Image (tube, rainbow, N blue to C red; front, side):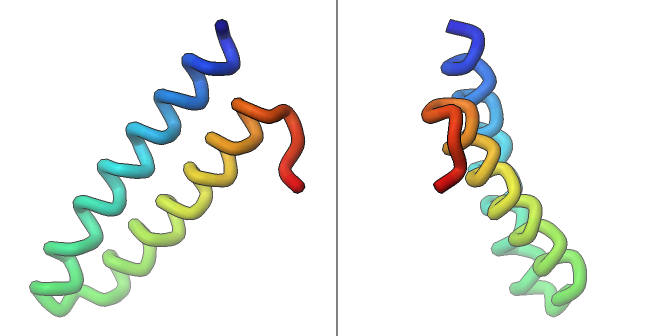
Length: 56
């Protein structure tokens, strides 16, 4: 139960970061957009790790 809650929370954070990256790129703030996309990728990796217990 704890792992699935952590996985859902990090998936939710990944969606928020991706949603914030789109307006950053539209306003030509590329550095901020890249930071948000890297955070999205990190959150997706953490989501996979929380659900399955292994990364690969």
